View 1 (tube, rainbow, N blue to C red):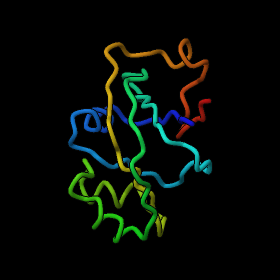
View 2: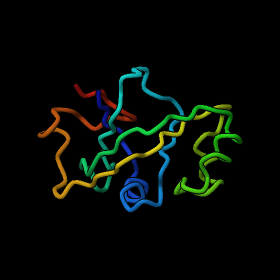
View 3: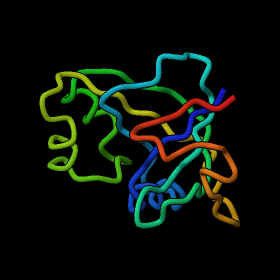
View 4: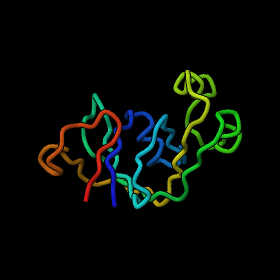
Length: 123
C-alpha cells in the first residue's frame, strides 16, 4: 500500500538529493501495510515529484528521536522542536531508495486527489 505525503518543497528536494533521510510527522497513518511514500511537494511547486520506500518508522520521545535521526534530519534542532511543539512523542519515517520522477505529476489528473493536508491513502 502507498500514501501520498504533502512535504514542503525544500524538504522534498533534500530527500531526493540524499541530505534528508528522515521525514518527521506529528501523527502517522494507521495502516501498517504502507510500504511506499509518494511525495507531493506543496506550494509553490504543487506537484507529485517522486517516491521512496519506507525503511523503518521510529516512534519515540522527542529528545531520543532527535538523537537517533539528527545527522540526516535535513532540518535544524530549533525547527524540529517548533514542529513538534505541544507533543511528547514524534515519528520519523526512514527514507529508502528515493526516486525523483523525470516528469512531475499533477495530483488531481494523475491520482484523482486534492492535495492532502498531511497524507492520503492510495491503492
